[in-house]
Amino acid sequence: MADYDYDLYVIGGGSGGVRAARMAAGLGARVALAESGRLGGTCVNVGCVPKKLMVYASHYSEALADAADFGWIVGESRFDWASLQAHKDAEIERLNGIYAGLLEDTGVTLHRGHARLVGPHEVEVEGTRHRAAHILLATGGRSKRAPIEGNTLANISDDVFAWKQLPKKLVVAGGGYIATELACVLHGLGAEVHLVHRRAELLRGFDADVRTHLTQEVRKRGLHLHMERTIERITQRGEGRRIELSCGTTLDVDVVLSAMGREPNTEGLGLEDVGVELDERGAVRVDASYRTNLPSVLAVGDLIGRVQLTPMALAEGMYVAHELFGEGGALIDYDLIPTAVFSQPEVGTVGLPEHEARERYPELVVYRSSFRPMKYTLGARDERALVKLLVDGATDRVVGCHIIGPDAGEITQGVAIAMTAGATKRDFDRTLGIHPTLAEELVSMRTPVANT
Ligand code: NDP
Image 1: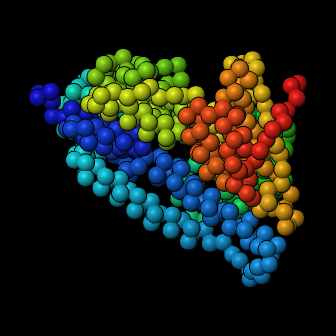
Image 2: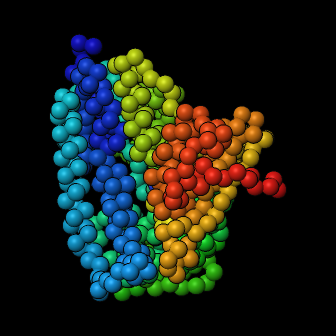
Image 3: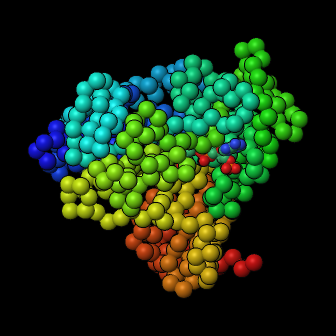
């Protein structure tokens, strides 16, 4: 590889790109990475990290409201949006620095600027060309603009993290991960939230019980859900926005937040010039080893749009580094992906939803329990948790786990380890519970739901 400047050139300093660059450098490769924005990508700057910090902030309203049930006399409380934003910005700046330090420590050369492909082995950054044996595209994704009249008047999720003030009243459009999470967060922080979604329930693709349960609980918490409705038009009204819904209702709000899916960041990368193929969704087409149709050009993360989750981009980035410069790695299992939706209440899920499990496992056995978590038993809060296990009757293996309730995401990570190791229902049953916890329900369910 002596006639190349680098063994690997990574375009994009988000989760997938940075992980691949660090791993490759650790395996002895000469690596450079180009990033035009802040290091850390969507996750660190306008995604998982600032969102989760806001989720924590939002939970205080519930804690303060319930405190009296546990004997606390709490004085008047007031939420200060500017203060949360300032603390969040400082933390993100710290993380940007950590990412830069990680690259430097592993010997990755960082090029600041916009990079584009100019050949199968060549990248141009701010007028300078670099030749590399392999090029990894990891430029992530961005929010899609929905085909709604006046959609440029809507904000997207990136904007929330830069808002100078919390809107008093807003419309959140969509019913997926981002809409559900941000609607709950902003409601918890004190905004009047109207969520408009074209379906009857949130989170299409999730287990049907999860969707029904979560939609009910979110409604109980006081969010205004306008289900089976679409937005016909958004217009300016003074400083605010007017929304016309398909049912004829009009809503006047401060802000419209559109969360209608994300698309791969393929623009300006030189893909057409060099002949990198895209798939029908506009994502970069790759094979099982993340190679594009040009063998020296690979792609990972949201740019290939398989599963738009940070841990997937990390896993794909690591796979590429080991495949190119190590001893190769095991193919990633796209069936057992743990995920959490940081809604209120929280959702944790790993494995298959029931509708998919039934197709794959004809002898499916379902265990389901819905109950009031102990955390809410002293007060008036009428919130129920859901724990659901799906078991393949033929092998006794647990093939799906779905939890709604406090810390569902944290609990699910542990279950994901057991399921990755191939745990059976018998293994769950012989595991001692931790009492009293919500999670002990996972090892106490003995009676299956009758087959319908
Ligand atoms: P999703 O695909 O999850 O949701 C998009 C929503 O927009 C859906 O409810 C969809 O409706 C609706 N929608 C799309 N087009 C239209 C339209 N033309 N008219 C009306 N409604 C429409 O995307 P998100 O933007 O919420 O999130 C993108 C990805 O980011 C997620 O898939 C997830 O992988 C990742 N993410 C993960 C998080 C986590 O791990 N906690 C948090 C946030 C994001 P319908 O359901 O009918 O298709």
